[in-house]
Length: 124
Image (cartoon, rainbow, N blue to C red; front, side):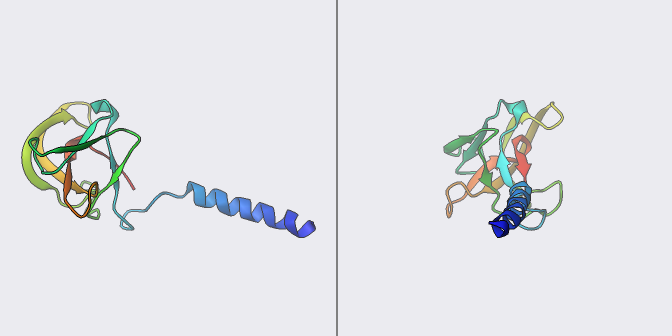
């Protein structure tokens, strides 16, 4: 019984440490992408980097997909964006943004899927 009492705090401490660790540090893996609160928690995933691409799904603020490419810089958490069709949304500084940068995400791999870069929220 005394062995169990000594082991349980160690196991509990290990579980707590693992549970609080981030999904990935910068450079360890692709970022996760979701919608932003400023865009009413809606981010469309499309088949092409343009508004005419087929809508595959709409991400919310709590469901994510994964970037296909690794971070190239803090300004590019999903790697280099693809230039495509123009869109508008509310950007990070709560201002209207007009942009044409799209990010490839792994929504329906191996086929390509895209989200609007300026409208997305990122998490490692």
